[in-house]
Image 1 (cartoon, rainbow, N blue to C red):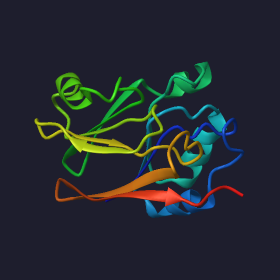
Image 2 (image 1 turned 60 degrees about the vertical axis):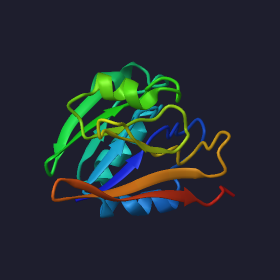
Image 3 (image 1 turned 90 degrees about the vertical axis):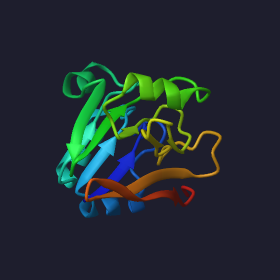
Image 4 (image 1 turned 180 degrees about the horizontal axis):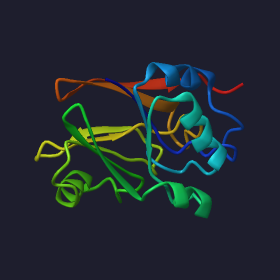
Length: 167
């Protein structure tokens, strides 16, 4: 099962449209996971129209229309692996133990908010993934997203993808 992970798209505020390489990934993914800050309902509609399955949550920049369609926290089992999706996890300092305590029944937590790519594992085994932002790199060198696979109840092939600068 191929996963496409993204967060903090902020379209059309931080970018007018999705980057072409990210759009090209949509049909390849079995599941698209978005960790909030869509900003516009049209972005959710676009992903739902071009993806086999979308799992998403709302973020702090998402208004009432998105909050009506998306949860604050999503839980899903994919090929035997227990995923959670949330926008904010608090400061980087202490993130692993804090998230492990908050989400003791998960194998993988996908989060956003910071726009900073993150891939760590808590002492409990909880894998924490932040794909960064494909449209707003903030202080990062690149805009980013992640892909991964779930095979036999294991997360494999986690890759951070750097997008070319917008012209």
